[in-house]
Length: 120
Length: 109
Image 1 (tube, helix red, strand yellow):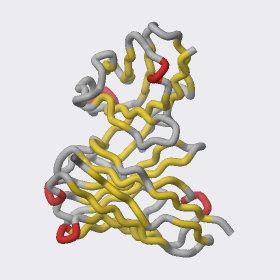
Image 2 (cartoon, one colour):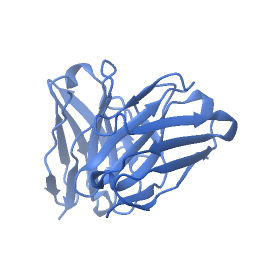
Image 3 (cartoon, each protein chain N blue to C red):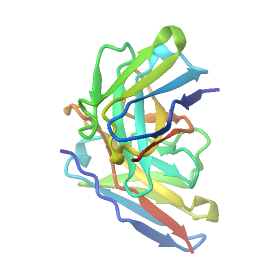
């Protein structure tokens, strides 16, 4: 069965960096676009970033553009999110999400999330 | 930019039908997806491409669209349906294409 397991979350101060990882199994990783989506109790779900199935194209939400970088390594069945210049408002539970296809924009499977807290 | 509007809350008695609306200017031309999120759990897709239902999702869940509003319909509501529900579109013409509605808390009275 499909599994997506996130890691790398933690508590950091504003301005610092974190790198999230997501190891996947149970499907053909190279055949699917992958996303990061975050959740906060006050704002709900927010789409963060997408990377094409082949890694050639990436898009970001306005609130993270220029600070976050999404990447993938098919040899390791892994998805990453490099988060720089973190802000208090980046505090959230970050989900690794499998697209239904190469890029459909329908979020078929979700990991359990990794918690990021940005606080001074 | 694309904005999806949902009511913060909807309440319904067990056995009744719940309708959760999602409004947006371009909804008529875009596919809508719906997700259910229970406390402490990851979201689960319950409707995709407006009215398709993933395997394992009860037939009580359905979706519709009319004009600029999409609606998630839950028939014969059960206590276990109490959750937050989010609509979502993919705006393929934008460089920030993923858009969620603000979410609706469904309360089963």
